[in-house]
Image 1: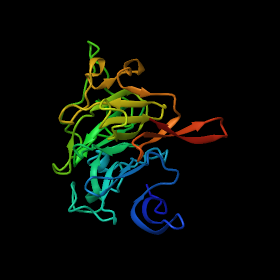
Image 2: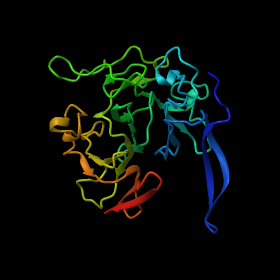
Image 3: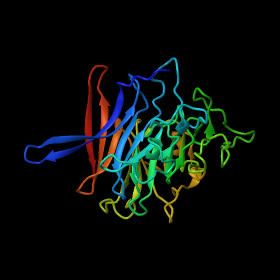
Image 4: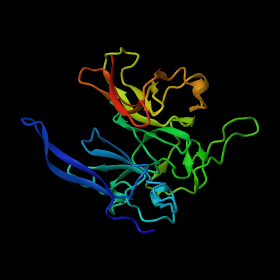
Length: 314
């Protein structure tokens, strides 16, 4: 398949002219080759505690209906050369690789902080540990929340949630004879590990039926009281906001009752984690300088009229 080299996904850095309130001096930091009419782009950016820039890049699938382009970062050992898709990339604020790279020293492999990510619309850094957490959309099942250590492999395009999928993204594993979920192996042997530099770990939480998780935010504010300080909030395309506590060493989510297995089978199991609902498609969550929670929500009034709303929760 011939890629259209005229299509790229780019990140620019601008200076802010405070006097005239305009952006000036654009500097191209990152460009990833893409296709016309792309899907699964990701595109969320954040500055980490190491002062570097992190960006989610989706797997660009279903952009060319007749052919699927597969790479090693999508866990195809004999796949196409790595081109920047399907992961979390890390660069300096000048657009340079950080060190020699985690997975390898050649460009663009040296930009990857994590890979095997189908599509992510939410990343944030734990204000206590500095570790990166991210959301990931599954095909039509297996949406995830992940703790992404350096070199993290989320398993896509072969694993979503705790289940394997076929090449069309359909679930291969469901329940055993007793009705219990059948997870993948703890160390799947058919994934790509880049000579041992990458590592797979299962998600810290999975929605079996897709809710399309989007933004992820750690609320470090004291405004909501100790009950919510440094806790995780996750938005969704279904207009819901989920709230999660973390365990004492902050390496996992603190889940109880029906969620102890780290899986929400459907919305009947949302009671302990549902913080708010009734929004439109939530595209972003942010903590404002006032310590309150801001929600960016897209609403659809009719087939021809759409609008966006910013809500404040205090």
